[in-house]
Every structure is written in structure tokens, then in C-alpha cells.
Length: 298
Image (cartoon, rainbow, N blue to C red; front, side, top):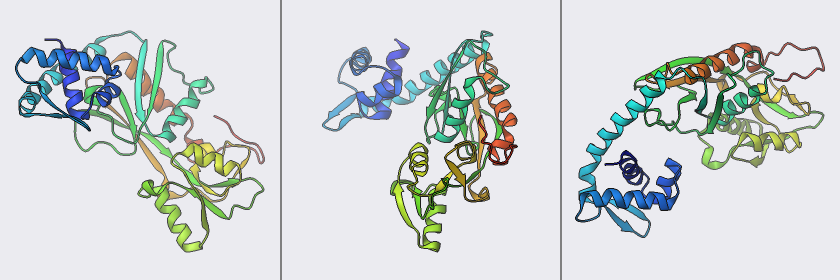
């Protein structure tokens, strides 16, 4: 039996469609269909999924195979992680799952302006996601998150903290707010801005789902909003309208499956991330060392 067919079977079971399974595995829908058919043919008799108008659903025969398939998956992924950990080669791609703010920070630090740099053979792949990637299934090699996991076989290390403050366009009276969408009202920055709206009576000029949209709106003078200090302090068109807001400070933790912690490429990225947070600690905390009127840059 081909392990890739087992992997496709589980992906379809979890995603509920061939298209969703293809997205999760990085395979085309025809490839998913072909491999699923091969897996079902292995067992003969009826198919393992009910084909419904809105997707695929495991039937009784398919449900019975899931525990065994997951055992095969766990064993295969353990071997893959340990094979990766045994390689001493400092080349390849390391996939890091994190949020938009931290991803932007890491991306700008690849320019070479940082004292610490990645080995030239390593390609960093940043996956912007607020969902916790399944590190055991190698959906990412490591994650950079606000909170450490409650359980699991992970290496966890605190990276550092991003300060957040209010910013507006320099020289423009910002009498309205830029904040997140209603669907994101549970985000702590959105909740904090909503409290300001209720207390001051200022209106909301824009609701947008990403920090880049917020930055562009604030830069254009649409209104004021909260941004990471490393973004706002370094922008020549923005001015800070408040001190860093303690309750919005974003703490970050490095999370890696223990099997991969010793992999040469992953270890290099862990060390690089730690060095960046240490090197730019003052910038991230919103206390840059610069002369009056001089803008900092990372």
C-alpha cells in the first residue's frame, strides 16, 4: 500500500472534499481523485465515502479504517521528522506558521540589515495563519505564537514581545478609528478600540481584516489605529499618538516538535529568530534609540 494514498484518504476525511484535501496537501484535485480511487480499490467492495452535493462524507466502512490509517500516519510522520532531524545539511525550506505581525517582522529582517543572518542554503517559508498549524503532521516545521501549547511533545521557547501603540498620519488630526471587522471583534486590539469608541464617542472610519489595510488607511489619514511599534515608529508618514499600550503587548513563543528540534535547518531558524528578537528588543518595545526627527529602520 502506498503511504501517499493513506495520506490522501485521511485528508479527504478531514476536509470533507477533494478540493479541500488538495489544498491541504498541495496536490491537484485530479491527483487527489486518482489516489483516493486507488485507496478505495485496495479494499474492494463499496466505496469508503458517500458522495454528497456538498462534499464527501465517510460511510461506515470508511469510519472503520480511520484509526488504523491514523496509526500509519503517525508512524510515517515520526520517521519523516527523525529523518529530517538526522540530516546535518544546512539547506532546504523551513516552513514557519505565524500571524501577520510576526511574519512581517521576520520578512523584513531577511534583507541582510540584521546582524544575524540565515545560512544561504535555507529558504524561509512564512505561512500567515492565526490557526495553530499541526506541527505533528508537518503542516509547518515550527510556529511563532502568542501562547505556548497546553500539551504535546513540543520544544517551546519564549522569543520576545511586540509593543503596540496608537498611530495617525503626521500633521493630520485623526478624529476617527481604523479597526478590525465585526467577525474579528473578539481580537484584543479590536476590543480595546471598541472601548475607546464607547468612551470617547469617536466614530469608526474603517473596518478592515488585516494590519496592512490598517497601515494604509492610517498612512492616508483616514483615521487613527493601533499598530505594532516596529511598524509605526519606522514609517516616515506616521506619528505615535500614545505610549505603548501594556494590555495589547503581544508576546511570542517559538514552538517546534521535539523530533525536529535538532534538525540542522530548523535549529538554524530557531537561533535566527531568537537573535532577531534580542537584537531588535528596543525597537520591538517601542523605545528606539534615535535622534529627534530621525526615523528608524530595521
